[in-house]
Length: 182
Image (cartoon, rainbow, N blue to C red):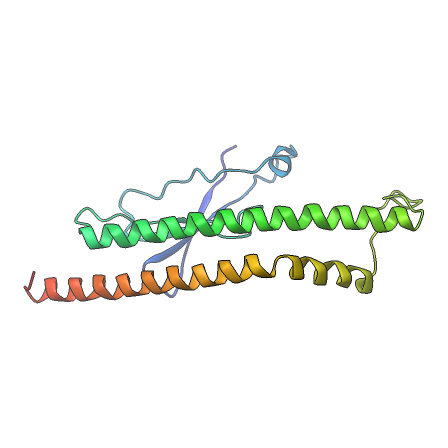
């Protein structure tokens, strides 16, 4: 059965959330094993940006941007910059999170094997390490990725300042258009 879409309006007037739900009668595990691409398309009469559920790997919410029929060159440039920034951010966090989980799993396996333990206990449950041992991994991971995160943060701030500057220009352009100046 097709997943229903729920529209939730927010305090910001040009923002709408879209959510996908699994039908209660569907017991197939295929949704858990493969990433689900968001195929929802907002209604043609919508004049809002739409925000989807968090991505499985990056934990970022995808955005479908509203494209007005009378979009100016400056508005198009702003929208495209926002889309490029969203895609760049998506790639970074997807790669970062996948790397984190692979390294974390390898760390857990190596620590358990050093202790002479398997991945599962006698009851078949997955073994975990205590917080102090995992703190060593987290500290090491952050130290190894410090430069990468620093470069990411600098680029993130640069992109956001550019977007903010363009948003100001678009607002000014719209205000001037309202009073009759072109």
